[in-house]
Structure formats: structure tokens, C-alpha cells
Length: 239
Ligand code: MF3
Ligand code: CO
Image 1 (spheres, rainbow, N blue to C red):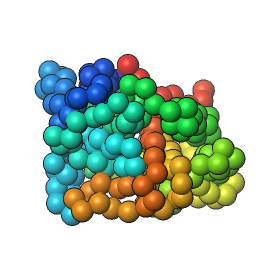
Image 2 (spheres, rainbow, N blue to C red; image 1 turned 180 degrees about the horizontal axis):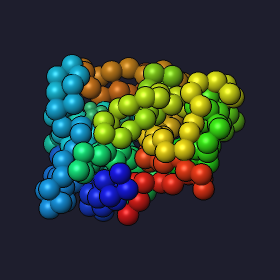
Image 3 (cartoon, helix red, strand yellow; image 1 turned 120 degrees about the horizontal axis):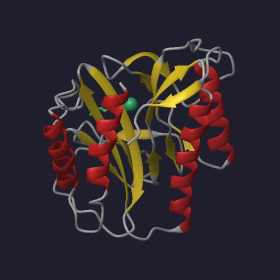
Image 4 (cartoon, rainbow, N blue to C red; image 1 turned 30 degrees about the horizontal axis):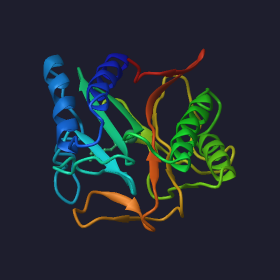
């Protein structure tokens, strides 16, 4: 899983370095796929079952789009933010990771959204110790994000990850201490705070995949695949 995560991070980085005004989200998908091809690995997103099979290797979600945006001819513009969510299957094991990046200059409020969402992921990772529960993770993330005046989706969650991209347990970014499933050594979990600026509510766009904020306000998303060990959390999706 560490190698799946490393290759995934490398392929994601090949897309991230291209982010600038004028680039299309389809070009980001192509850059990601070029690295996967070199490693002879593939994305678990491609053909993932849904309203229709997911048509790309990454999700590109711009501005109000929270998750599951489909790469297209859409050109990024100065001041946009874009989340890229990426997955890799290597020798039957999955790495799952996302980052949100500014396109050129963005407002201080937007920078703050990115910073807080990234911090929320770090806070979630710190909870990945044997004996804690999934509710402890959610509680820590929710308490932090809401203390900053931002919102967490109730509809989409983190998840166990291993031989499949989506395994148990579900790991919501909200919750109560001690609730949910107990975390044990050896579990591997994709933690992914999804943060909204206006309300927690989301809507699905007409393409039936793209999830956006209901009020059109900006959103951000960061994700790592993390292993629970006796020595503490280990991030598996690192370069
Ligand atoms: N990687 C996403 C997650 O974090 C899911 C991608 S949806 C897909 O759970 F349809 F594109 F696969
Ligand atoms: Co995930």
C-alpha cells in the first residue's frame, strides 16, 4: 500500500505542477494517466460504478464543486481553486489521496479555506491511534472546522481502503467521542475532510457525478491514506 500511495502521489504531482490559468482539467487527467502508464498501474476511479461508470482516472472539482468533478475541456481561470482526487491500484492494493490547490492568486478568505481544510486532515491523522474510535476522528475534525466558522459535509465520508478503494469502516468528518468503530493496529483508512464555506449542504450537478455546495460557495478537500500502527499514524500516500 505504501508503494501504491507513493506512485499515486507522484502521478498526482505530475497533474498539480500543470495547474495554471488556461490549462484544462482533461489535461490534468492526461498527465496523471501518463505517469500511471509508465508504472503499469491504473486508477480505481476509472469505470467506478455510479449513475454511469466514472469516465476518468482522477476527479477534478473546481470552486463550488466539492468532490467527483469530471475532467473536461473546462479551462482553469486565475482565482479558481481546484481539488484533484486521485487513486492508484498497485499489485492489488489501493492508494487514495486528494489536494486542493489555488490557480494563481486567490483571496485571503480562499487561502484560509485551503489552510483550514489541510489542517483538518492533519488533525484527523493525529487521531489514528489504536484504541481511538472513528467517532473520535470525526469529533476532532468537526470541532476544529466549525470553530473556524466553516462547515463539514454530512453526506460524504472517509473510508477504509486496502484491496478495494472503498472498504469499511466509514469515517465521517463529524461525530461524537468514543462512537463508531474502534481503531486497531494494521487498519488503513482514507481520511478526507470536505469543507464548505456557506452551509453543510450539497447538491449533485446535471452530469450526475459532480457534487457541489448547495449555495454555490467555495469548498475544499484534502485526503491521505493512513495506516494505524503501534508507533502512531503513518501516511502511505507520500512522495
Ligand atoms: N477517491 C474518492 C474517495 O475519496 C472517490 C472517487 S469516486 C470515483 O472516496 F467514482 F471517481 F471513483
Ligand atoms: Co477517498
